[in-house]
Amino acid sequence: MNDITRTARQIISAPEDYLHDTSLFTAAWATMKAARGQGFDPQRLQPQHLIGRPTPAPEPLDQTLTRVGETVRTYAAKQGYRAPRRHAA
Image (cartoon, rainbow, N blue to C red; front, side, top):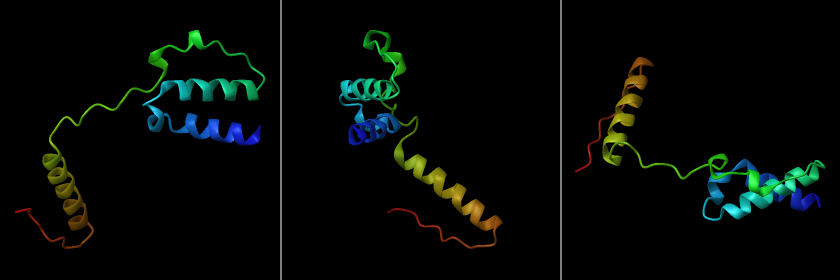
């Protein structure tokens, strides 16, 4: 029983890794409730209680990388480091 509870705890603690099959999350939730001696009605667990898939980034990846790079270079400059500016060809 301890192994089942440990596996259920892993699923509950990282639900985004199990979004492909929400029944795994539901079963893990039921296992955790049963381990505490509590009842569980799966009909009450509505989809809004589950974590949805992440939405795409609001900006293209190259813009995100450029913005993050500039932020890191700015912070490094404030700390007294010289960060090289590398631009992708």
